[in-house]
Image (cartoon, one colour):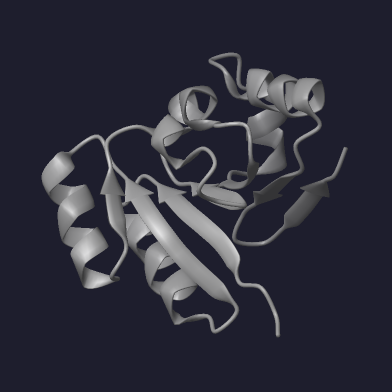
Amino acid sequence: MSTKLRVGVVGVGYLGKFHARIYASLPDVELVGVVDADPDTAARVAAEYQCAPYAKPEDLLGKVDAVSIVVPTIYHLAAAVGVRYIVEDPLSGILTNVRGTENVLALACKYWVPVVIASSSEVYLMDF
């Protein structure tokens, strides 16, 4: 018997809906919940993929093993909830953006949280 990976998606706008759809379709994954700044969007996507809608990323703490953070780069730090996470951004953007993303990496180092930084052409695993 295998245990399913429990995941959440923070930000279910255009791209976040793809994350939710793909997680919901994977046999070894349980989409636990979605978070969005717009409660109606969170509720609609949650209903579509049979999971719970949440108002804040912190609401996923203790419920998930990992999250996809699918919000604009400047909000990545606010969305990092202390669990494994994946963000989509070119590595150069993560390392050079002075509006907060380097702080996401610092947070990951501080709490020893594995991070996956993905873009359409590259994937970087930062496992501390």
